[in-house]
Length: 90
Image (cartoon, rainbow, N blue to C red; front, side):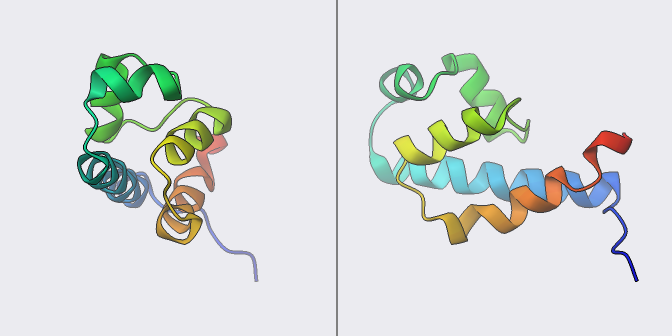
């Protein structure tokens, strides 16, 4: 039996969890947005939007963020996978 795509509401929750991981890791890192943003690609404003729950536009952008913040894959990948599942349908 195929797995159905998660609802838009569920994906928003996953986006908020992902955003929380990014925000927590940045605060733990101790560097400012002005220091981190150039290393990962987004502007400071884009980084703030990501921490507010906007999903980065590309997989490469996600990988840059989590690499700069040294996030373990198991802490964010399940949520991000659920965000992407069925996204092409919306």
